[in-house]
Length: 116
Image (cartoon, rainbow, N blue to C red; front, side, top):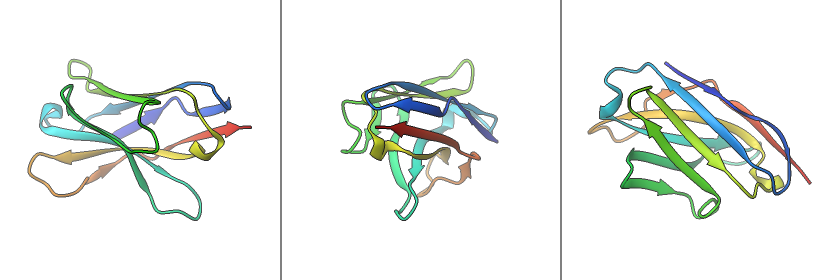
């Protein structure tokens, strides 16, 4: 089970920190990711992390977001800075078991709205 929090309304240029609490098996064996869904567009992978030295960032978010995880708390975070109106969407936390091709567990999503 994945539970996101931290979304909300922010002005352009502002920051938000999304959190994801995971209770999905052995946390350390999962790659964790953040995706976003914008109406009318395909779901986009924003960032992913296995270890601190193994991360992925979408080109559209590079330099503006940082993904991190706390193994002791089974938490994943997405720090977002310099937010733009086009970053508006529902952000989902997801988990991919080691060896799996796809993310198999999803949270309910948290809304991020960036006003201009």
